Length: 360
Image (cartoon, rainbow, N blue to C red):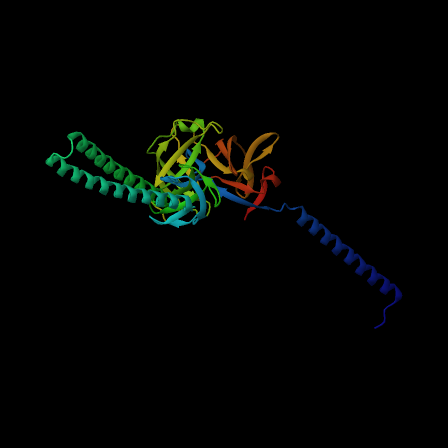
């Protein structure tokens, strides 16, 4: 079947027209698709009743209830230090040794004095016995006998003094070795080998590991709201587990530099928290408002007003809030949030009121 040139032209024109219409329809469909708002992926959290409680969080450290400064009872030059910070020691273990040369020489001198005093006492005793017989025979006067008796008593006193001096020198030699008086752990060193230390100078600090406590500082506005016996929750930076504890001591005097008050809390579970650990201490303060702490990243501002985005029906709804104090990476929300609300904590700076969101 043959087509005329006119029929070919009509067919070609129809094909071109169909293609143009198809392309236009496709463009409209793409524009319609692109015009539809796409939800923004955000990270959220749910406001809980615990967050809206009057709990406050403070940074603290684990200390021993008994931290003993150790020092020598004699002066001298440190010959050797046998321990370092973190070493566990047992009762009677030698921690630091002083140079013993002078002390050993003093002990030898005192020993010689004891021998001399013993010899003098023996001679005085023999003279006394001889003079006693001579007095009975009338060969010496009573005055001569009394003089001999006085020399004997003086020799006896000299021996007692020499013995006492010897014991003192021996003790000082023993004091040249600083020993642990109980089991514990070394938490500080204050002197090094070669250093000359005086009597009573602290050279080590030792803590008893079995009596641990959490120590933290609270500001002036908080100290009046807590008391001994109040419950606290203690947790480490490496675990979310909370350990129950109780306040047993509150410093009556503020620190001169920070103007904060030191608080000590005891706890029973010693398996998780170790000496020297940094911890978080949560405590409830009576009479405080029901505020909450949320991540700083959740807070944004519109027209100079602070707020957060709550998620309702997959939309971000701006909520005005009243801000309080900062605490680490969190900020206090005094009002504007309710229990159970879902708020955006990541991506809030890219949102606008009413925007569609998708929870990650």
